[in-house]
Amino acid sequence: FMNYQFPKDFIWGSATAAIQIEGAASEAGKGPSIWDDYCQQHPERIFQQANPAIACDHYHRMPEDVALIQQMAHNGYRFSLSWPRLLPQGTGALNSKGVAFYDRLIDRLLAAGIAPNVTLYHWDLPLALAQQGGWGNRQTVDHFVAYAEHCFRLYGDRVPHWATINEPAWSILNGYVTALHPPCVHSYKQAIQAAHHMLCAHALTIQKYHQGDHNGQIGIVLNMSTVYPATQSSQDRAAAQLADGALNRWFIDPVLLGRYPEDIWQYYADWDLLPEHSGEELGWFTEDSIDFIGVNYYYPHYASGDATTTQFHLNTTGENDPQQDCVFSIKGAFKFVKNPQGRYTDWDWEIYPEGLLQLLQRAESYRPGIPVYVTENGIGLQDQLDFSPSLPVQQHVDDQERIDFVAEHLKVIHQALAEGVNVKGYYMWSLMDNFSWINGYKKRYGFLYIDRDNNLQRYRKKSSYWYQSVIENNGF
Ligand code: GCO
Image 1 (tube, rainbow, N blue to C red):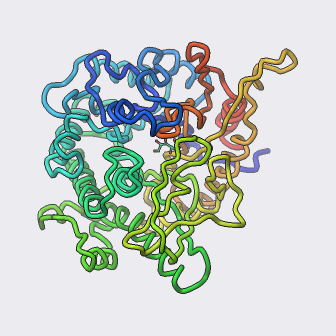
Image 2: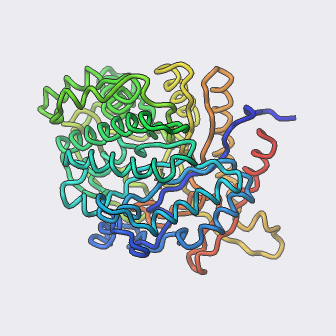
């Protein structure tokens, strides 16, 4: 008897991103990305001076990794293509070895009955384009669209699901507001300009895909963090509305409604923060353009209107996630604070499954019936290997906390389904422990434990066996 039965065609998978797992950073013709460069230039900003040069060596171990995905019974896998592996300079000639790598990956997945869900951009901008201004440069839009068209031509016949950009809001916030990620700029003006270019690149790519003769679906992956007021004061409620507008609606509205949200547009206009834009560009934002929406959810935010301090902490201890310490403040208008009642992980991320339910309901309210995929959800832990002879192999990495976390979130997905939200699949972050940006390799997210002391050996964690049984029963 299943308490939580899922629809027959539900996709059960896990997710990764190229820069976080592939390694082979300067091999086989790959060009450098902003992350390769950042870790080289500023090793002190990354926990234990880690870098993605080898990562999980997935580039070389791909057949083994796909075999593990198959063994774990997943029927879907979300990964990203590395733009600088395919186009080392970001533009120009394709790198044939890069092309061949993703051909092999996609073919192997399909042969194993695993449906690929492919993200075009997961933060690894080609360095050559960054040197010309990156997302701040209008030309990057055209370069991105050209890159996307290559990908559709190369793999479009075999990829059922595409996503343009992973978490544009967070990529912009990290790059231009907290400045913890490259290009490490503190500028709201540039943040909003770069965001506009990303949204243009997204919109134009969707158009191109639909104009082409492809039979898959295309969408975007948004991190639609729920934002609550820290207290019920009118100041905090206004702060929450603004924070939600800047972080969520600024991205959801162009994508799903075909226009920027008026209140935030006006707010940015008042502060002289509006992006340079043309009428033609705004015309690329159209209603009903995407076929599905991908939602990444980790934790909720609490906005306070008392944003008198603006601090940007660099925390490279890996103990706390700097995103939590960090005070976001658009011209002193809001900051995020902790929930005193919250249940928090080791990295100070609150565990709050109800937040996911609200996001799913929100996607549905934007466009009833829209297919929704939970494209990321998971928990970073300091998992340990334990080879005590008394333990069965399934318990060599006992990550019961991850099982509890995933189960709690699957329950709210089940509830959303019961309420009529068209949730089509769940991709746990992540398939394997990987390069977690400035947290380096300490923050482990995987179903597979990567033994960094022993030749990057893979071990299945307890959660992977539990998830396999969920998949095999299509519920739990
Ligand atoms: C982490 C994050 C993940 C990702 C992912 C974001 O801490 O590593 O929680 O969300 O790294 O790349 O899309």
